[in-house]
Length: 173
Image (cartoon, rainbow, N blue to C red; front, side, top):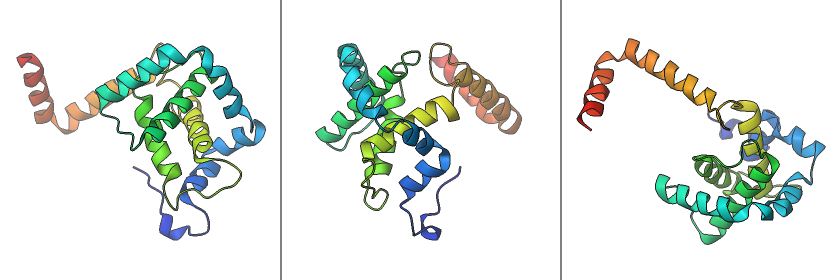
């Protein structure tokens, strides 16, 4: 797991550092109005997605710290669904966005007059879905399936007793 070492990089808040270094800032520089445009356009897909988002949050235990954060979460996910209609909204995206909102909006992590923490979270989500994990979201979920097969293969080789226990638990259900 790679984590930012904030102590060694005191000159730039860590959320902005990740935004710039991962490549999400390049998209923002090319299309600075993208989030606003997608937010405005997302009103056409709001009703069903809003229900899905709230249901997914309740089911997965995704915790929004306030009504304001839930509204930010919904705006980002609706804007993303409008931006990426081939992907839309997938279960679990709410967990990713809440994590991004907390990281980008928490004290000391973001201090830019150029871009809001909500926009920052949106552009990072676009980058995560389309650049870092392009096959994990969408209709086929091939990346998730491949990652699952790899995980099971590694687990069988490194922890056979754990695999046997998982199989026994699955048979009991």
